[in-house]
Length: 103
Image 1: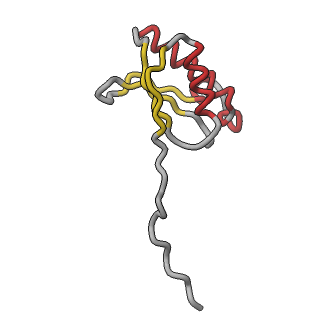
Image 2 (image 1 turned 90 degrees about the vertical axis):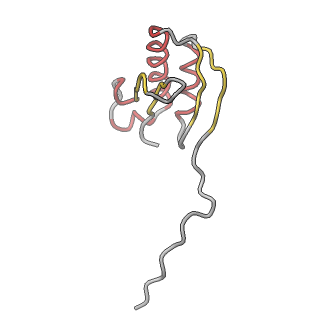
């Protein structure tokens, strides 16, 4: 919710590049904006293009407004998005709550 973190990995899951809205230059409350996410995605796309990565499979995780903006930023750099997967963890009823405190 407060920052957008972007990670580029290879097919085996080894990290190639990591970028966030804070590392691009946005501070405090501006890190959680859609513009910051888009700018960070554009920077990641440029790094990918320099490394020779032309096609990507995108996995989106988490809440917030930055997901769609990051996709738009990635598309503007010319990187071809092959697939799109939403992998946000959703609790199905979650853990059992603690007992009520009795006084």
